[in-house]
Image (cartoon, rainbow, N blue to C red; front, side, top):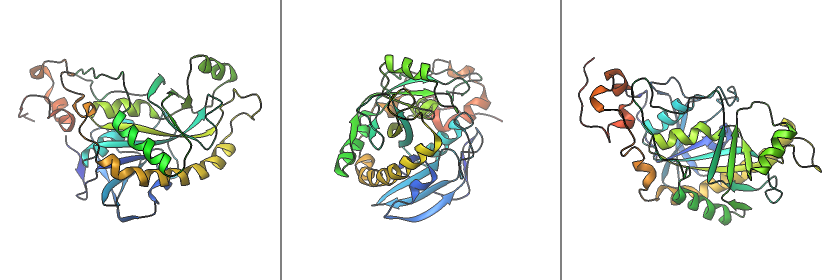
Length: 300
C-alpha cells in the first residue's frame, strides 16, 4: 500500500526534531501535509517549506505538544512518510547528555556511531514474510555529516566531530551506576530517540546524520547537579536557536550531496526469495523495495 497524501508535496531534505525548528528565518511557502502510511500515522503532520531554494520537510518527533515519549514514537511511520514525499536525506536534531568533559552544554556533537540499548521498539520494516539485512557498520552518512560540520563552524558553533551516541530506552534518565558504566565504554553522548530512527532510515535508503545538542552532563559529573527536565529546557532554548542557524547554513550543501552508498543500502540485502514474499507485504513495502526487487504485479 503506497502512502496517500491529501496534498501533492515534495521535499529534498527531511528535518526531524522539535516542533520549533520550522520557525527558521527565510523559510517560506509553508504548508502542512498529512501523510498516511502502512505503518500508521507519523508523529505529526509534515511542515513543508522552501529554504534558500531547497524544499525541506520538518517532522516533530514527539508530536505537537510533545505527546509521545521516546518508546511511543512511531519511527517506521515517520521515516516512511518522509520517503513518500521524496526526501533522500534526513538531518536528525536531538537533545543529548554529555558523557565526556570536553563536550559541554551548549556544544554540538556530530556522532558517527551508535550503541542501541532500546528494548521496546520495532527496528525494521522487513518482517511478516520478508527478511533484509542492511549494512550498518557506518550508521551515519559521512557526506551529510561533513556538510553539517562545515555549517556548524560557519555559524560559530563549538562542534565535536565524531563520537558514539548511546540510545537508551527511557523515559527515565540514567542511574549513576549506568552513567559511569557508559563512560567506561567510551560513549560520547546519551539520548533516547536516534534508534531505531537511524536503522530505519538506512533500510529506506536515506542518508542520515545527527545534530546532537548537548544540554547536560547526565549524572556522572560530580561537580554538576543531576540532570533535570528544567535544566535541559533552559539549555535547549539556546541550543534550538543555534540549531536553526546551523540547519539553514547546511541545507544547500546537504541537498547537493552526491549519491552515496546509503542510497543503495538494499542492494543484495533482501534475502527472501521474491516469489515467496506474500503479496500483501510486497504491496506494503513497494515504496522501499520496488527499486531492488524484480518487476512484479500483485493481485489483491
